[in-house]
Length: 365
Image 1 (cartoon, rainbow, N blue to C red):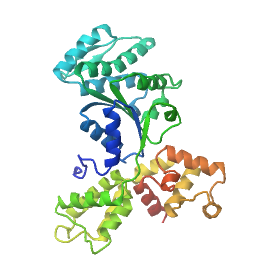
Image 2 (cartoon, rainbow, N blue to C red):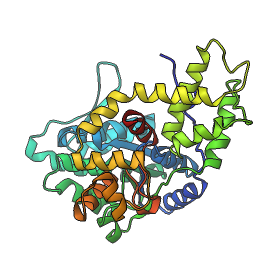
Image 3 (cartoon, one colour):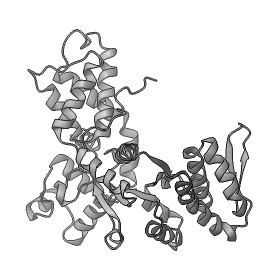
């Protein structure tokens, strides 16, 4: 399988957001990064942490199916970040009074081991959350604890006990910055001392500069006398993840073309064919997603794909697409926004994943 050479190690655009996040981390503050998947949330927090010379501990809450798995992911992330000899020695000494120990695995790597009953897992949770603060103080460094897909913790934390404790730790710890990554900001963040930074799609000017340079590194260039480049930008609509996917597909298609663009400039029909091939490859994923949605939400998605509007509540639009009236439509839009599939009013209610919108329009058309 051909890798993706268009995955950038540098932050593209987002200089204003980078400055904001860096300032928060320098002040040992906490934040919530809101945005749809693929918009660049993790890349931004990593870039800001690197700029502030902070250690980053990342936990993906989507991978945690219960409290035991959550604790395992937290422990693994801690050791992955603090794997230097002096940090390991400190953890071994510090853990003597804690409900866990460090032991080498069969591969020789150190792992966190605990032997506690299910009723005592809370003490382990408290200890693992105290450890980053202790390491930060001892090493005199900044630490950023990143929880990706933070709201997913509720899938097993039915009583919100673990979430509430994490919220308290956000307020309590002084040397550890908490960075929560979610699709949208929730109501409780307004009452907490938590900065919220929402990531909108990238401006075309930033993506244009990136894709031209990235293609040039592969000895490729768009024919600027045609709308090829604008067609590319129109398909991805500022979504960097989709731009990376389409760039790779275009590059692979050109490599295997009998008339590669290495000899001629990239033409609009080549961009179009690559976009079609890409969404056909993604069709199984998109079909699975659609099957999980209520019919009312699917209807809204299809309507917005075929007939984009910033006024889906307008009576004419509702009648034209046979949408639910009143609360039914508003509920569908709110749920789609929560899932990261549709932007809210500030972004004109457009579908947040451009390739999904293109696939819907292609399928329905």
